Length: 501
Image 1 (cartoon, rainbow, N blue to C red):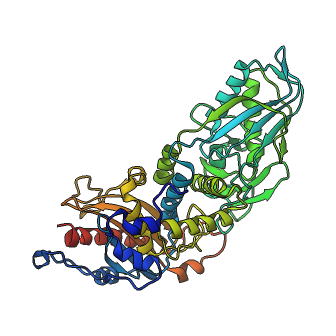
Image 2: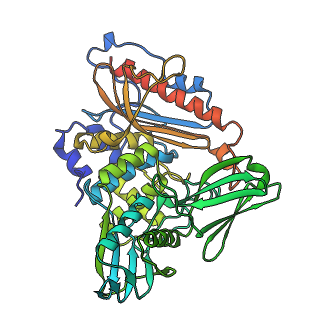
Image 3: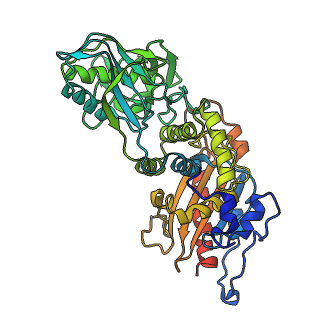
């Protein structure tokens, strides 16, 4: 049963009928309130502000813009333009994912990564196999594996007679979140049941007297173990900058020498997460005096094993706060699939899990027309309407789980600098792709009135014209995005003037 009050119960009287407008729209009827500004009882004294259509026109944005703002106490739609049309939400999707995960898993849920022994430990010798078992933890890093290696030694294991196995089948393997993205971008890694360092590897280069010295490391603040599960070759060519091929046992990268300069570094995505995590653990185990053989990836956890070490993640609520702050795509895909697995007993793929989340959003949050293709918003084919998003945010406001983990968004002054003293306070989730920009969350007006809102802008034509595997920012994208963000602030300031003053 959903932890959130279902849409039917909610509309049936939880708020004493205050969302009568939501009921009609959620059930497919014509909205019972206008999408034009509604006068308050003191409407004769209501301040005037530039109209929404005028603000959108003056923003000089190609494509389409949709927006909606809802009073969180009454659930009444105050205003909207193209509010019931589907728009690409980009990373605003992560706010829906957070609600979905909290509903299915609970705020205190923790992911577990385990070391299991298949066989007895006698005089410090594990007579059977050692298994590294991933539980999907999206925050597992090299530091965490180092602690597990230390704990394994403390558990009395000094050597392993059998094999070293690694299992990542807790979640289905996905080679990349979105195959249309450039191969080398670190925000588009593989997803698995075991994910180390957000499935990224640190590539660093330094020019020496005899060419370039390159390293590939599972780097964290404490450790820098070198890896062979991802390898880099510097080559002479005009382009492209990076190429990737599947090396069988490893990720095989190449980089064009002419683009490197003197030195530098970047994070590259990992496409073989089980091998990557197993190699790093093996290195860390050797530092504890425990030599392991080459890891073997298995599709099932061997029967008869017992747990020697368990590493638990931070509570889900903290993981989600960081996900929303840093917009980590891997975290979103992991927690979304984990929620579907908890609800349905199994999960087949990111796409099928996103369909289940879309169904949940429509049924539980009343997000009519929600159609999501992933949990992160990286795929540009997802669609949400501004009204559905704003209504859903208004509905969950009373539960008090989402707003505290959303990121504060500072509005700017006339000179474009962040203004911490701005009278309007905003906590929201941003969403950005090339020629797509979104913002959705909560605003507190100068007089304390709280509103939920969603603003989506997209130029589908220009985005569709982008070449596949685009490596660089396309011409015009930076300016388009800047204009979209200025429009978002102007709309918020309008709503403050009209509905909160």
